[in-house]
Image 1: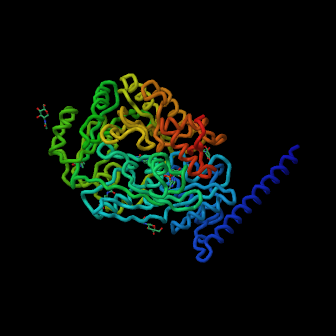
Image 2 (image 1 turned 180 degrees about the vertical axis):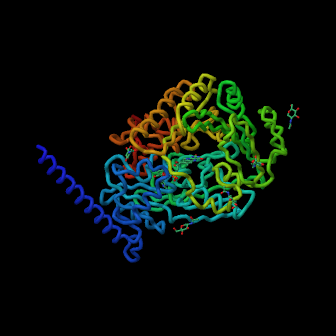
Length: 555
Ligand SMILES: Cc1cc2nc3c(=O)[nH]c(=O)nc-3n(C[C@H](O)[C@H](O)[C@H](O)COP(=O)(O)OP(=O)(O)OC[C@H]3O[C@@H](n4cnc5c(N)ncnc54)[C@H](O)[C@@H]3O)c2cc1C
Ligand SMILES: *[C@@H]1O[C@H](CO)[C@@H](O)[C@H](O)[C@H]1NC(C)=O
Ligand SMILES: *[C@@H]1O[C@H](CO)[C@@H](O)[C@H](O)[C@H]1NC(C)=O
Ligand SMILES: *[C@@H]1O[C@H](CO)[C@@H](O)[C@H](O)[C@H]1NC(C)=O
Ligand SMILES: *[C@@H]1O[C@H](CO)[C@@H](O)[C@H](O)[C@H]1NC(C)=O
Ligand SMILES: *[C@@H]1O[C@H](CO)[C@@H](O)[C@H](O)[C@H]1NC(C)=O
C-alpha cells in the first residue's frame, strides 16, 4: 500500500513535469514563430531555474505572505521591452493552454499579479520595463505606460510643473496598472475624484493580441477599465491622464489623541464634518496601537488626524479652529519649508503632538507616504524603502456615523493586538458628485468615509499568521452593525478573497456574491462587457469578472 502510493505519486510528478516541459516548450516555440525576425522577446523569458526568475518573483512581492514552498508561482516570467511583444505572449499562452497574470506595481492585497490558487500553470507578464511617460503641459495631460509606478508619475509631473498634480494614491511604489483600473484614491479625492475619474484614454491588448485605444475599444470597455479592475479584460498598456491644478504651496498637518472614551467625541465630530468640508480639505484618521507588547509597557491606541489643505496656513487656521479648536492651531505652528520630520511614533504618552508644514504638492506626497521630506526627489523613483512585513487588509464604507459603542469595540480590539491599523478616508466632494454608474466604482453619494482595516506581522509561521487573520476577521464581523449593508460594500483595490472566489466556479451567480460588494449595480454591466470582449474567459483570476453573454438574463 505504502509503496504503491509512493510509486503513484512519483508517476504523477513525472507526468506533471513532462506536461510542464511540453507547455513551456510549446509556448517558446510559438513565441519564436511570432517574433520571427527579431526574436527579442526570447531573451526576456525566465524559467524557475534562472537567477533572474527568483529575483523577479521576490521583487514583485510587496507582501511576501505567499513566498513559500507551497505557493503556486509562474511557470515562466516575461519582461517585455516593447508593447508589441505582449500580444504575442497573450496569443501563445492561449494557444498552448497557459493562463497569464499581469504585474504592474505588485501591490495586489492577495498577490494575484504573481500567484494563483487554482492550480493551473501560468505566465507572468512583468511590466517593469514599460515605464515611458509623456507630459503635455499645454493640454494638461500625460500618457504613461503601466510599468510606471505612482512615485514616478508624481516625480515626472513635479519635474515639469509646480502647479500640476495627479489625484492618485499615497504610496510611490503602487503601480498604475492595478491602481487606476481599480479606482485609486488619495488626498486629492475630495477635490478631483478618483484616479480613474481622470483617465482620458487608454491602450489595451485584447484577447486576440490586438492593441486598441479608446476609440477602437469602444465606450463600454473604456468604462469597464476605469474601476472594474484591469485584469479581467486584457492587458492595459498605457493610460492618458488628466493633470489637475494645485497651488504652488499647500499645507499638510496632523494632530493626535489617544483613542479612549473621553476622546470619542472627536471622532463623532470628524464623522459629521470631514465629508462636508470645503473640497480643498482632506482630513483622514489613522488608528494604531503604539504599544510594544513588552512586559509592563503601557499600550496606547492612538488616533492621528492627518490632513491636507490646498491653500496656505493662514487660510487653513480659521477653518481648523472652527472645527477642532481644542488643538489650538496657529499659522506660526507651520514650518514654511520642508523640514526633517520628528518621529511620528509619538513616543511620549499621552500623545498630544501636532505638526504642520507648508510645502509643494510633491513634498506632500513625501509627507503622506512617510518619506524623508528633505530627501532628494528621486526617492519617488525608488519603490523600496518599506520594511518587509506580512499583511492582510479588508474594507468597509460608512453611511451613518459610527456610534461610540463602535469605537469602544475598535479600542478593545486594538489594545489586544500588536501592529494593526485602521485608516478612515473621508469622501464627499468631487468623488461623491459623480453618478454611481458613470464608472464601475459605485461608492459615491451617501458614503461618509471608507474604512481600511489592516493587520501586520513579522513572523509568517502558520500559527502567527492564523492569529493575525483571526483578529482582523473578528473585528470585521463585529463592525457589521455600524457599516454600509445590503450589500456590505468593499473597495476592489483592497482586494479580499474572504468575500468569495472563482476558484471552483466561474459562473455569474457565484461571482455575484462578492462582485456586488465591490461594484453594486455595476457588476452586471461589467459581466456583459466581459462577455463581449473575452467570451472565452481567458483573462481570469480568483476574483475576475465572470462572463455574461448578451441576450442572457442575469442569473
Ligand atoms: C502599501 C500600499 C499602499 C496603497 N495605497 C493606496 C492608496 O493610497 N489608495 C488606493 O486607492 N489604493 C492603495 N493601495 C491599493 C492599490 O491601489 C491596489 O493594491 C492596486 O491594485 C495595486 O496596483 P499594482 O499595479 O501595484 O498591483 P499589481 O499587483 O501589479 O496588480 C493588481 C491587479 O491589477 C492587475 N493589473 C496590474 N497591471 C495591469 C495591467 N497593466 N493590465 C491589466 N491588469 C493589470 C493585476 O493582474 C492584479 O490583478 C495600496 C496598496 C499598498 C500595498
Ligand atoms: C504559503 O502560500 C500559500 C498560497 O500559495 C498560502 O495559502 C499559505 O497560507 C502560505 N503559508 C503561510 C505560512 O503563509
Ligand atoms: C524604466 O525602465 C528602464 C528599463 O527597465 C530602467 O532602466 C529605468 O531605470 C526605469 N526608469 C524608472 C524611472 O524607473
Ligand atoms: C479660534 O477661535 C476662537 C473663538 O472662536 C478665537 O477666540 C481665537 O482667537 C481663534 N484662534 C485662532 C488662532 O484663530
Ligand atoms: C522636532 O523636535 C525638536 C525638539 O523637540 C524641535 O525643536 C523641532 O522643532 C521639531 N521639529 C519638527 C519638524 O517638529
Ligand atoms: C533626510 O534627508 C536629508 C537630506 O538628504 C539628510 O541629511 C537626512 O539625514 C535625512 N534624514 C533621514 C532620517 O534619513
